[in-house]
Image (cartoon, rainbow over all chains, first blue to last red; front, top):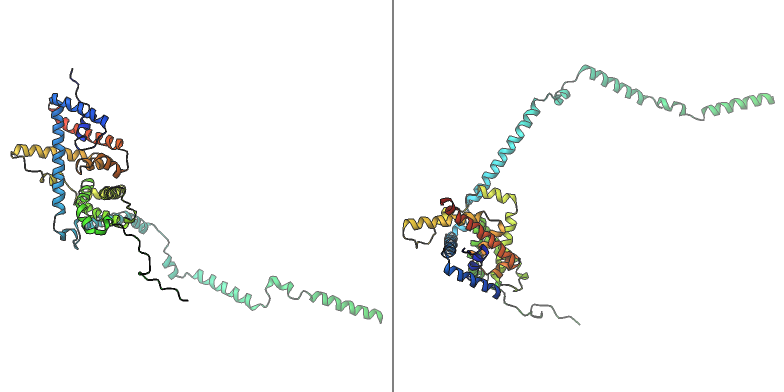
Length: 177
Length: 196
C-alpha cells in the first residue's frame, strides 16, 4: 500500500520553497521531497499546483501593471468616472423607489374624507354668527358692569357694618334723650 | 534686562533622523504598484483599488510620526492597506457597490495577460482554464484567507512578514494557507474525479 503525502505535507513543500522554516520542519520537508522523487502522483499534483499558482501570479502581476500603467490622465480625470456615473444611477434609483413608496400614501391621503378645513374657515354659517354675536354681547355686558356679579357682595364689605353702627348710635342717643 | 528674542536660530536643533518619508516621491514610486496590486486582487475593482492606493499613502503620510522603523516600510504600508480594505469591505454598502460596479475585474480581463509561453492553442486554453480555476477559488475564500493567500502567492512574502502585516501568529497564517490551498486543490481535482 502506497502512502501519499498529506495535504499539510504537500503545502509545506510548496511553502518551503522560499520561506525560512525551522530546522525540525525542514526535516519533514526533506522527507516529503524524498517521497516526491519516488511518487509520480504526488509530484504531478505538486507540479500542477505550482504551475497554476505561478500562472496566477504572472497574469495578475502583468494585468495590474497594465492597468496601473494607463495614461496618468485616466487616473486623475476630471470627467466623472464610470463609478461616479454608477453613483448617479444609484441615487436616481433610490429617488425613484422613494417616490414609488410615497405615492400610495399621498393617494390614500387624497381619498380619505377629511373635513375641509379651509372651506370651513371660508364659509361662515348663520349659527356661528349668532353665537359670536351673543358672545360679544355677553363680553360687552360684563365690561359695562363696574363690579362683576360674583364680586357684588364684596363691593363694600364695610357697608353693612357702618349702617349697623349708625342705627346703634341713633338708638343710643334716643335713649339718652 | 531684556530677554533674548526666540528665533529659529536660537532654538536648539533636534537631531534629525532620516525617515522613508523624507523622499515621498521615491517611496510612492517604489511601492505604489505593489500596494495597488494588493488592493486590486483583494477588491477586484480597478477604480476602488486606485482610490485605496492613494488613501494608503495619504494615511501613511498622516501617521508617519508613528512609524518607528520596527518593521520594514513595505510591511507597514501593507498593514495600512490591509486595514483600509477591512474598513471598506466591512460595510454592506461595499457589497452593493461590488454588484453594480462597472469597473469590477473579470477573469477574462486577466486571462489576456497570461504569458505567451504556451505556443499551441490547446496549451493556451488549458492555461486560461487553470487561471480561471484559481481566480474563482480565490474569490470564494474568506477575506482573511484571500488576503493571506495574495500576500504569499502573489506578493511572495515570507510567512513572518505576513504574520507581521496581519498581526497573526505564523501558525495561524499557515493554517489559513492550508485552507486556501485545500480549496484550490479541491477545484483542481474536481474535473479529474468527474471524468473518472
